[in-house]
Each structure stands twice: as structure tokens, then as C-alpha cells.
Amino acid sequence: MSGASIFSLLRAGLLHRPLLLIYQMGKVGSQTIEATVRSLNLPHLIYRPHFLSAQRLKVMSARLQNADMPAHERESLRHQLDEATRLRQALAVRSLARKYHCPVPPVQIITGIREPVSQMLATLFQLHGTYFGSLEKINLEACRELFLVSPGLDAQRAHYMKTMLAGWGDWFDSELKSVTGIDVYAHPFPHQEGYTILEENVARALVFRFENFSSLGKMLEDFLGKPVPGIISENVSAEKDYATRYQMVKKQLRLPVSFLERVYSFKSVLHFYTPEERAQLIRKWQAAD
Image (tube, rainbow, N blue to C red; front, side, top):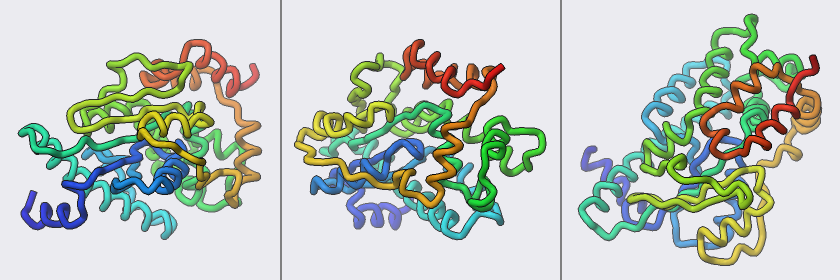
């Protein structure tokens, strides 16, 4: 890392100020968490990255070559890539500093998981310009074709869907563990409570399930050690221009049991959801025989 890069990180406060990252996959309530945490007037610098690993940076950089990507999605992605690069550099320097016992506070991380079909469906609608081209093209069958990567799907969108599925299945290893050293699978997850707090050398993390989001206030209070007067909702699907279509597809979407059994056998699903919960989710999305 160059001296200019280190100076830039110092100037931004990324090497010495308390740092809080809302670091998780998309569509797991990150904007609501950010708005709520910012309302608490913490001393931390607060960022909301969805990826920080070198592998994911490369994958997402390649997406900028998609000529059909809407301008606002392209600008958002450029911003995410620039921010992720700086945060990676800051975490590397902080980790080195703590290795040599320099007084650098651990990075606070909030990270969550959402059951995969719901999370992926919400992502398709959030990025509908990339996956459908326009709002008018979204319908039940188009969503099924994307989930199942149907033979008629164009190569670019087929690649995006395969990448999304693979990324969902290994996010906690390829992102959180590789970047911070926190291994969620080394600790049993308390399904009834719906969240846990883990700590390693460079980071301390609140790990939660989106299905327990109604307890977000308690989770944040336990993690941050201060009262959370209220939750500030942001980026809610019900308030989007695609809300009606989203609710229709969410209610009617049914998928083959072979697909569902594969998805609900991901390592992350097995860790965060009980056998009974997984069976219930398969029944919810299963197509009739």
C-alpha cells in the first residue's frame, strides 16, 4: 500500500476512529439498520458495504461492463467498489496494528442473513433494471425463469443468477471470515433468540436472522450497549414503485422441490435455520405436483 493511500485513510479517519460496518448481503434490512444506528449519534464512522473480499470486488467490477445496466445502478456500483477498496485497506492496516499491540479498537460489524428464496426475490426486484430491463417486464414466469436459470435465459443474466446463488451459499466464508477472521460456523447459533455476538482479533460482530428483525431494537441495544429509542425503516419494498408486482410474485411464486432442497441445503441455511424451519420454507415455495 502506498504512502498516499495510507494518508488518505488517515485523513478519512479510517485508521483511528471507531468504525462500524453494516456488512452483509443485500436485502437483509441494511438501510433500516444504518438509519437507526445513525440516529443514535455514535462516535463511529459508519459504512454499509455488501462486499469487501478481493474475489467479490473482481466479480462486481466485471459487472460494470454490462452495457444494459441502468445509469443509477452503475453509479451505485462504482461507489460501492470505491468504498469497498478503501475499507479493505483500512481493515488490513488495523489488523496489522492490533497484531503489534497498537491501541486500535475492534471494528464493530452488524451482519445478517435472510432465507435464500425471499432474499433473492427481493434482490431481483431491487435491481430490476439489471435483471428484467424494465418494470413492465416483471411477471411471475420471468421470475421463475431467473431462479431456475432456464435454458432460454440470455448468457449474461444466467451468469448473474449463478453468481448470486453461489454467493449466497458461501457469503459468510468468502466475505466475513476471509476479511475479518470471524467464523460464524465455529459457534452454535441460538435459533430461538435469532442473533448472537461474536468477536475475533480485529472485529466484533452482531450476527442476526432477518426473520427475527422485529427484535432489532433489542439486538442493537445488546450489541452497542446503549438504548435504541426506535427503529427507522428505510428501503421498504412496500413503498417501492414495484410494490404491487413484488407482492403478487411473492404470493404466487412456486419452485420445483429439487431446486428448493438444493438451496435449503446450503451450509449457511443448515447453520442458521432448524430442520423444522427449513421444511416449512420448502413447503411454502414448493410447486404443486
